[in-house]
Image (cartoon, rainbow, N blue to C red; front, side, top):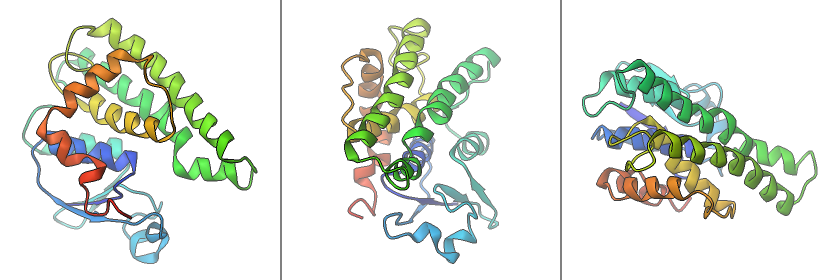
Length: 214
C-alpha cells in the first residue's frame, strides 16, 4: 500500500495515525498542495477530486476520503481495533469522529478558508475568527461528550485508542495553527497528552513527515 499525503493536511494526519496505531509501515507519497500538485493530471488520475489522502492498494485500486480509508485499514490490518466490536461503543467512536470530520474540519479546511478570503473578500483576521468559531463550537461539544462518557480514562472512550483519537489529535494541531485558546478543553488536552506519549503518535506527526518543509 501507498498513502498519498500532505504533511499538514488534517485528513492525511488522521490516516497516518490510524496506520501508526496499527503498526503498519507503508510508503508515504508526498503531494505538495502549496505547489498545486493535487490539481495536476498525474494526481487527478489517482483521485479525480484532487484531494489528499488517497490510499493505493497492492492491486492499484484507490480508496479516497479519510473515513473510508481508516475503516478499511481497521478491517484489513492486524493490531488494536480502531472501531470496537460492540455496536454501542462503535457508534460512540463514529459519533465523535463525525463531530470533527463532518461538522468542524470542513469549515476550516484550506479550500473553504481560501474561498472566504477570495472571492468573498475577507481578510486574515476574519478568516482566523471564522476558523476559531467553528473549531471552538465542536470542541465544546466534544469536551462535554468525553467528560460524560469516560471522564477519568486516558482516551476519549476508555482505555483503548480508537478512531476518535485519529480525528481529535489533528484537529488540535489545526486549532493551534489558528490561535484558538484550548484552555477550556482540559479533557481533550489530557487525551492529547496520553496519545502523544505513544511512539506511534510521534511517527505520524506532521513535523516527522518527509515533506514537512514544503
